[in-house]
Amino acid sequence: MDTTQSGRFYQRRIALFARIMFLQSFGFAILANILRLTMQPGSSLEVVLADPGNHWHLAAAFSSLLVWFVLTRRSFELGALFWFDALASITPMILYAVMARFDTAPSGRMELILLLIGNLYQLARAVMVPSNARYTALLGSLMCVPILTYTWISEVAAQRAGTGTGALLATSYTILWCLAGIVTASFGSRVIYGLRQEVREARQLGQYTLVHKIGEGAMGSVYEARHALLRRPTAIKLLPPEKAGQHNLSRFEREVQLTSQLTHPNTIAIYDYGRTPDGIFYYVMEYLDGMDLQLLVDLDGAQEPSRVVHILEQVAGALAEAHSVGLVHRDIKPANIILCERGGVSDIAKVVDFGLVKNIESGKEGLSLGASTDTRIMGTPLYLSPEAIRDANSVDARSDLYALGAVGYFLLTGSSVFEANTVVEVCSHHLHSQPVPPDVRSGRALPQDLQRLVLRCLQKDPAERPQTAAELALALRRLAVPEWTQERAREWWASVDRTRIRRAAGERARSRSGSQATATIAVDLKKRSFANTDVA
Image (cartoon, rainbow, N blue to C red):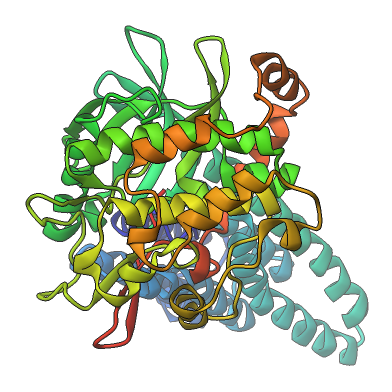
């Protein structure tokens, strides 16, 4: 069962399964007893009621009733629901196997009857209970254990009496039919589970229809979507109800409010914001069909100096606008800069994810994880400025320039400025170590003035860096580096396999809970605690 499934929905479906199987089992017991009374010579109500097999049949039926009764009386956590799922599936099969052992009715080959019951339970569960194929196969295998046990025991007894066909042969046949039931149920679960996932991803948010998931993080998920009337693609960031505490909601609202103030062409545009009737908060932004700089380097390696200058200049322009209204991004990193094509222009850089923005004028922050902020650093360790590590309150626009210099270093070399095994080691390097020159790290010749500018951005003392993003953008324009032309950009994008990009982005989104060094974190230096606040 996918842990992202709604626990309440899962509980309702298990309860429905238990209820239906009780009704079927109990109804079958009543009808079977009526047939026995009317069609078996010498049968009487006393004989039927005294049959031990009848008792165990009713016990199997009432075990399902018990599960239904409990699940409709109170709510359970997801972990407990897995046990109820197993209980509703396996317990009746154990009781049916005992029924077969003691049944005195002339029912014929009881192992075949058990197979029919077992396959019915498996298929009914596959239809009614949301589950992936692996979990369905596991439960199906456990449900078959009582059937195989009965078959072996009964055939051994029959062989001793000289009437059996061989315990091994009979059990082998039973195994084959059990496997057929398991495979069928598992395939059914996979199909139904996949359809349910598609339905969930195609749900409506007002005028927007979700198409598919682009990425996911601790704060929520990002989907590609389409507006019902405008028909243009958009991206929607969702904050699910289970994550919509006051703290997260405040951060989510602040992110959209601050980002919507910015109109620079290299800052992602915000279109809409709202809340669905079922409590999902969302905001709508322009859809960027491209790749972030982290993925660019992962797929294409270190970039040409002219392209690096082209990208950095655009990002510096976006930061210049943000800084001019008193906003510091605080989480500039390759994954938060998207490279795309817009309006027929290739290699447009877009700055995204303003979830950690700090308003310098008011001192307010986009995230607060406790009562005190004077010992808390926030950002991505590989791109943290020294002052952000020493004193979070001293962070200003020049901290973003340090991070942008680290991004430039990454683009030129394909490696981070500092590499270490732990977050603490990375932070220590930012505080005390000097970067290896990019040409030395990459082993290739690089324009010296570009290299000096990148290293200047990486100075420990903010006063030795460019003092504004506008100053950095001007310095980048003045570099004696060949221009990255639109012709070269279009040629590069024409050679790109878009399917490969989307597949790689999807794989990374599914595994983005990995290294803390590349995730956005908050670190309380006083308590030495780390909180992962990575957002999609």
